[in-house]
Structures are given as C-alpha cells and as structure tokens.
Image (cartoon, rainbow, N blue to C red; front, side, top):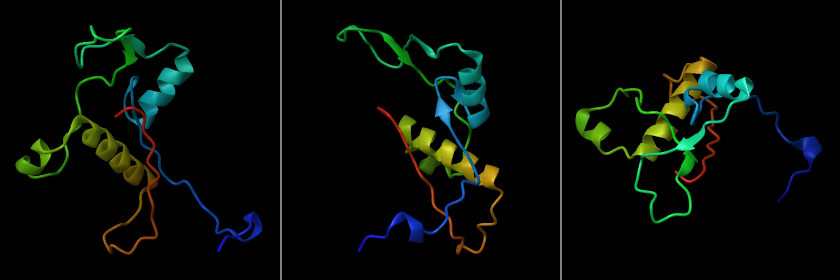
Length: 114
C-alpha cells in the first residue's frame, strides 16, 4: 500500500551529526563548507600507488572515545567509528530523552566509500 504525499506523517529533523574530511562533528563540516576551501588532499590511510590518484577527502585522526567496554571499542572498524560518532552527535544535538527506550526516533544514515 502506498500513501500519497498529502497523507504522510510529518517528519522533524531535530539533531545533526557528521564526520567528514573537515573533521569530527557537524560544526566542523559546516565551517569547512562555509570556508570555500576543499578537504581533498593527499591521503595516508592506505598505499595509493596501485591507483590513479592519491587525492581524497580523509577524515582527520582523533576519533572521539565512546562509552564502551575496551573489548567492544577494539572491535569497531574505522567506518563503525564514523557512524557511531555521527549518530551519537545527532542524538545529543536533538536533546532527546531516550532513557525509556520508547522514543519515536529514527536515524537516517548516509555514507560514501566507508
């Protein structure tokens, strides 16, 4: 069953989170985009010699720490860290009370190559 646009439930964006080549956090992304500069530079995450370019937008080092047990934290891939950091930032930014576990909340997650 499909709903037409007139009968859709309203959606509110209440929090933002981002991880990008400009840094950790939505404010770093916004400042970088507003500066008119690019985040594309030579990268060092892996050996680029087999590829046609060594230019990319690389997330800076310095992932935030997460309130996880050390064993859980060690299992997070770099991409997992990006997703978790952006999601937690968005939830904090939204200032939602999630303690009841019954919040009507969803997270939209978008990514490229990682």
